Image 1 (spheres, helix red, strand yellow):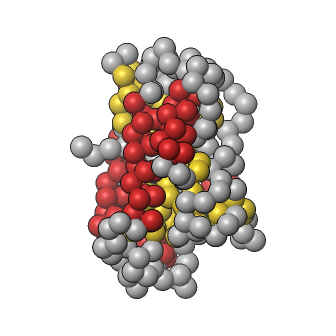
Image 2: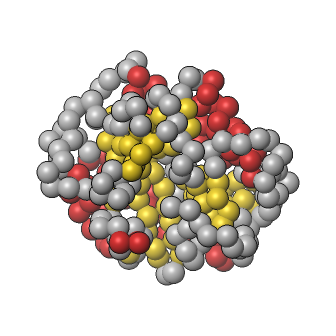
Length: 257
């Protein structure tokens, strides 16, 4: 989902605190999902947990009804990249790579974050390495989210970590600004050249979200109109944090610690 061409809105400190509150809800719900996900569960179970977890904390699910999306959670398994629709017929199996993306709105401000887990213990597997590389490339991108840098410094850092590991970044879907709308300018691609794009300024809040494929970068969207899968059928992983750029550097709003 691409953000329309609009100006980048800088947030005041009080607005960043509102965004922190919304992202706190997202982070807590994601932590609950990561602890609960297991073999035999349906993805509809996870969607119910997401909706109830957000509402119990005083928020509303941001994805439910967004451009017609029918659920509170995007849950994408194995070759699914993003926007997987929960279903009572989809059961999770041991060894599945499960990516969960949660959005919430609290007092008019949005939170958005995602993580990937492997169900069960599978150290050393390709899936485990893919998840670790995707987590690391998000951290590398966040480290570049500092005043005076350029937007594509974030993008290039992500791409560098991914490609050094022999994986590829998805180009069809990108990160985005976030605030009083779920998707605001600018787009935050996971590929690019250092020194390119808008200069980063305090008050920008970005949802940085690398989507990393085991094989090639190409994806296709299934007939449900939402679920994006890898074109070659190989694995994909997804992590996301909402990050405020401050004078002192990046502040991750959707992290619990």
